[in-house]
Image 1 (cartoon, rainbow, N blue to C red):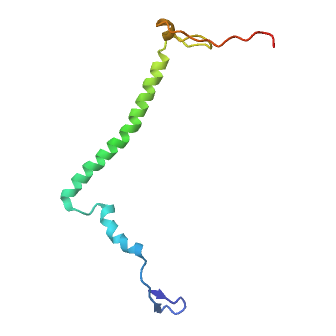
Image 2 (image 1 turned 180 degrees about the vertical axis):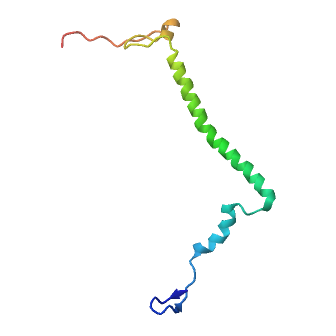
Image 3 (image 1 turned 60 degrees about the vertical axis):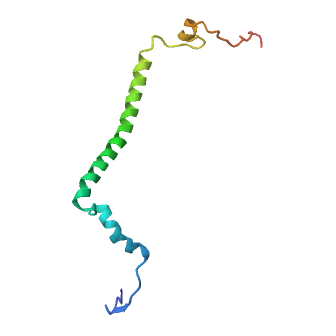
Length: 105
């Protein structure tokens, strides 16, 4: 309904757009008022399952990061440039080294 500002009388009316008509439909979904009492515990369990699944992702990621940090801290030595890795020398893999350049140039 349209109201005139100076006279405060009704001057006309318009039809509502489509989206306010959807609000009464979405309200029970938003507030969980659908399906009655039997549906509420089912949805509560599904919501808790979603929380556990969403929370376990970052937990597993952090645990993997900690495990990788602990493993790298437990390495027996740190390699310096040009030094073969210990595993390669233990299993006698051929290691190709780049040719040395001569001092002239």
